[in-house]
Image (tube, rainbow, N blue to C red):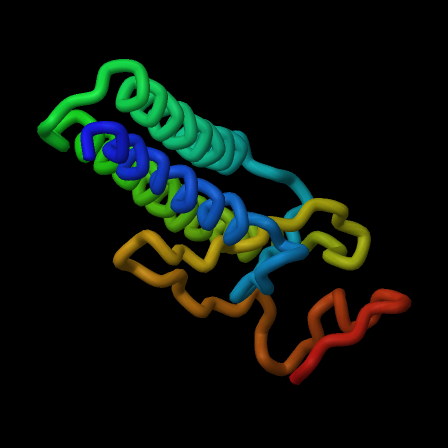
Length: 159
């Protein structure tokens, strides 16, 4: 039983994989996205911090598994602490993504005069599987107008 404690922090890698999977727009359909003509610096910082949290969670999970293999123990305290730290980092990454969706929404709404069809940047909102607040359903465009993705060639939207 002493050698099996590495499975506890190693299961943190499964959580990290799910966190990376939910951040992939090609794999998981984003609940919403915002077209941005100019990416705010605060949004770049929040996105980078979110990615760093997920990378740190992976590092903590790997370090915990390696430590459990090299120095087996009868008590699960350290492996469980590594798993809890990895989970906390992934929850923190989703919390940062929640903050980022608010920043992206405000930036998209404040770009009122911009031609959104010419904008090249988009922010995909993370579903937030590990955070207790789900992303708010906010529309970037008023209901009486069409979104710029409706008019882009080769792009269809479901209404």
